[in-house]
Length: 219
Image (tube, rainbow, N blue to C red):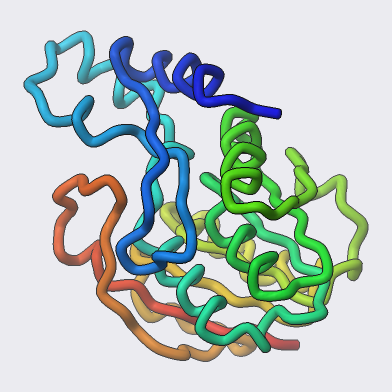
């Protein structure tokens, strides 16, 4: 089982004095995550430290705005996942995968190409008393083997819009949250709602990245 010292060691590739702590999510209080402790991010950084943070950002050590929104939506609407097999693409900290399992999903596969994210997801699942299966390669998973695909903050690059079609190779339904690309148009997706959110711990992001759009996709 992954321990806090192991996560501390991973995050110190980003910032040598950083460490993680178990933090409740303000918008999703049923879930706690091992995230970078805010105290380590609240001081002036040297140029070398800034360079290291940019080059080795531990994305798994933050709960991004879209992750909070999608996790909250799933917990508020458990029928979305109850009794279903679920694939969480770009799992990061694992927050959405954890929410799906807590809400009654039969099984959840958490997928991310970042090996550290999968270590974090395993630790966060244990912290919340659930278990998920880990995968580091979407394309190694069998097609049409899931009831639902969920994803948060995976459209940070417009090139990733092609995934909107790829997702249906794995599941006939998709639940997607994103704060980067606004109001995309796709014949198989419809907008569900919008919500204000924020990163935990706070990064003082621009207001435009605090507004999260939630979409449902269906073939």
